[in-house]
Figure: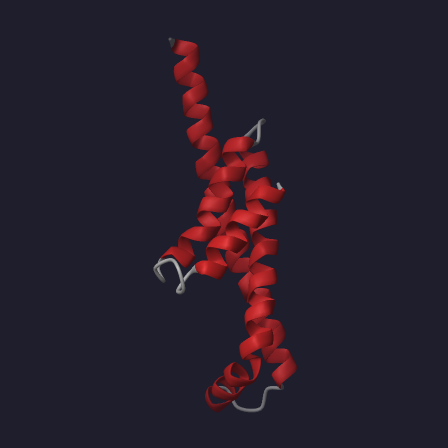
Length: 126
């Protein structure tokens, strides 16, 4: 499912520069939708093949974003959350980013397989 990883990462990287800002939240869903549609089998295959590549794309994107802007983010968060180390805060944000993109990819994978399943059922009925 390399195409899902690449599509999700491209949509995330171009959001704000070449694409409108709201599209960034649709990137993981679109990636999961592609995975769910391309995968055969059952709903579980759509969920797994949508969630895992999109989750890793989110992990790469979040890690890269924090590498560039990490000092500013931890400084502003430490003013809100007192007595937490910068490393713990960065790791927490990276894990939260992975989980968010993983869940969004699972939703997209479920929707993609549901669309494919409906087309298969309609094709059989005709």
